[in-house]
Each structure stands twice: as structure tokens, then as C-alpha cells.
Length: 112
Length: 109
Image (cartoon, rainbow over all chains, first blue to last red; front, side):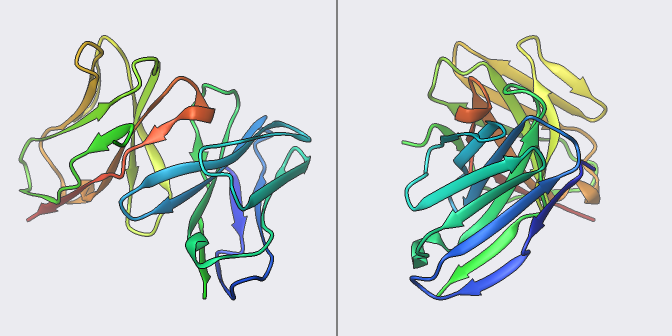
């Protein structure tokens, strides 16, 4: 299994609070991604990174920001969580931009 | 209309059966296609890539039809352990990959 961890694995928070999710990899892969998965929608890309401090928006980036200060860590921040951001969040990594993506175990976030 | 569409199922089949899933995609510029497997409350895991010429991995066969814009997955001799949700994925590169919502398969004794 690819060396990817996510923290926390579960979180319950209230509307309007900031939330940061962490993805950590030990594979030294250049690309990292944040997805959300909701029933009936499949996985949707939020943001991705193609190197340290190099990030770009995905399909559903509104309300989210990211940072990557080290190769191994990719942070996803919800500045002011809303109930519509209740979801399962998956981090993924890949060596290159067209290579197979490997997913982390996911973070289950509930915003009340 | 979703960019990648799959029949959500569920497909309920007996052990040993052959089952096929289809997936359609709308972006004709898509170059890369994959099937992922996802167990309940777990992360997706790559099952196989899909190549233009079709490819096989043991009991699993994947095919791509660019003219009709669909990909398929065939599972022969189904095992109980094949029970999972199968995700179809397609795109030009990883930052525009589109995932289907998944097809649920249950293999019964």
C-alpha cells in the first residue's frame, strides 16, 4: 500500500468554524490531490498540487484553500465550514500528472 | 449531464457468474481511463487501467470503445471477495479526471 495517511480520520464540527485536514505521504511523489466524495456524485477534485507551493483549483474549489510547504504534506482548509461541506475527503498522490493515483484512507467530516 | 455515467446497480450475482459493467463518458478529449474498486467505507484502489486495445488481468477484462465513448469491465467466475463498488474514471490528465458515482456489486454464495 502507498504510504499515505490522513488526519483526522473523523471530525465533527459546527458551521462557521475553520477546519484543516492533513495529508501526509512517504512516497516523495510530486503530485497530491484533494477530493470529496458524496453519494450519487462520485469523487470530485477540490484542489491539487504539482510541487511545493504549486497548487491549482479543481472542479469544486469554492470554500476551500490548500497549502503545500513540504513535499510530504498537503493541507486542505475550510475557512468557515458549511453543512454542504459534510463529506468524505480523500487525498491522493501520483508521481506524475498522468500516472496512477493512490488514495489515502479518507477523512469523514460532518458539519452541524 | 454527468461527464462519466455508470449504472449504480446493485448487481446481485451468484458465485461463479460473469458480470459486466459499462460506463459512458462525454468528453471526447479524454485520454486515460481506469477502473477502481472501493470497499465500503474504504478508499478507492486501482483495479486496472483501460487501454485502447483492451486488456485483461486474470478474471478481469477491460475494454474501451472510443467511437461510442464507453468503457466496460467484465468479471468472470465471480468470487465473494469481488463484492464492492466499481468506479469508472476518465480524463485527459489527473487534474481533470472525472469519476463515475460507482456500480455496486454483490456476489452471493
